[in-house]
Image (cartoon, rainbow, N blue to C red; front, side, top):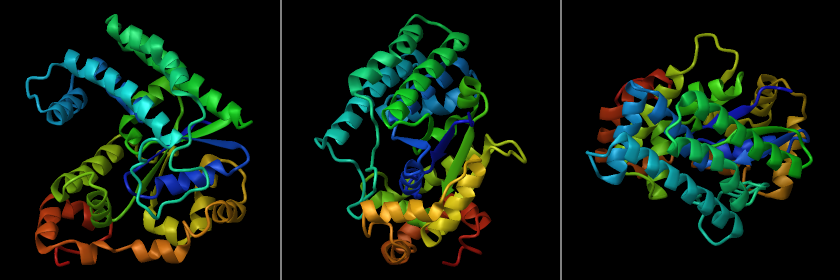
Length: 322
């Protein structure tokens, strides 16, 4: 059995990529599992006494608007958030809640693809939640969460008649250390997009302000890269711009990375047949660089002050004169 794989990145083509992979006859696509990020955040809060836990606690203090939030309170908030995220995903799948995607996004497998019921997920994560509330440490929590994850993902794959799975959840690459400790060898695919387009896209969807989006884009990429060992054979970085201009070539790179045979052209054709027009090269290319007409002078100044150094290092700009 090949190592499991996780795909991450915000507004950077991860849903398109996971749909393609889910059309492979041997790969079962599981997405999105935001509750898993909630539970991984709990593990980090409990086991890490350093910068990692501090960063999670600072994030949650800002999120709930309470600077005095304790670690124990943060853990309980995340348990409740995991339950909410499981329920919300079920509502999205049932068509009773919005999926948070742009109107042009249509996919063969849908914007979310989960083949378990919310009740099954809640039952499966129950032992982990009980262990957390009983005060157990990482030596108990990591195996408990690994067991829950593997049981749910195997259930999902089996219902498609498959044995291997690949997961996509935008934030999950922040938790590479925990996933490695839980699952052993794991592969990670990181999709990166021009930060100005990411910010424009997220602002248009009312996710973030320009300032928050710029900061989130930079911090996410920096943190994901910080967890990668030099020369790692289990980490693949892809550019959104390459994916949308060369679906077949990028898919071939991904299949090679995953060490699995496949026909990228057939996978692309299947997506176009099942969700016509949604991923055409011309449509996708037309959405590249939309920040040029959307970002005001103030928006540009805000982004530059926060993330222009990363934009330059990634090759999206040569200086601050844009």
